[in-house]
Image 1 (cartoon, rainbow, N blue to C red):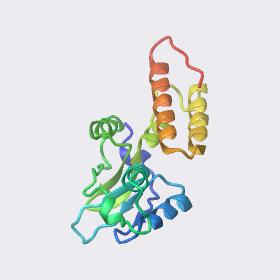
Image 2: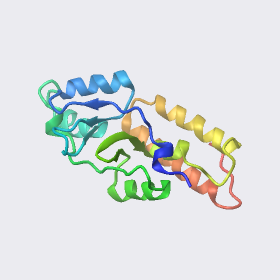
Image 3: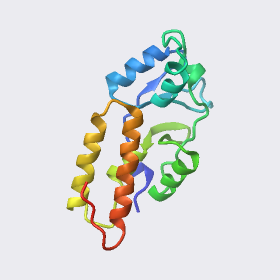
Image 4: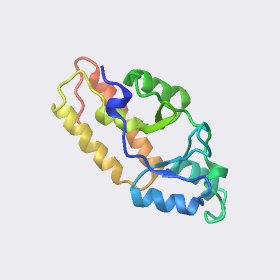
Length: 177
């Protein structure tokens, strides 16, 4: 059984809560990520998270100047943390229940990585061999989805792809991605 530890993304980009949103946007672009983990204020404090969606809805849509808004004022803290030892199915359910697309993986109060819906789609196992045509098509479709610069359209594509994978897993159905 695969666990979160097996499929999480280990390289995590961290930002200080004192950084401006302008700095956060620059960091997201430079590192090609859709979220940043906000470092702890002190040892026992929870991690925070800031996503592209937070920035779009909390800054851009409100006409605020990103150089005048700080990460600490916009981030979600505490954010939902994902244990490294749970199954992929349990992790997917936790993400679904919380209505989020990604969460930091934390163990013993240490940041180990980040788990996203995309990690589950790409690295999670299906009931078919890893290199079958469906897996190849899913990987190709996700690569195409990554090229899109519009976060909302990318999320829609990921949801559409997840639905196609679900449909393809039903007995007797074949889906061309």
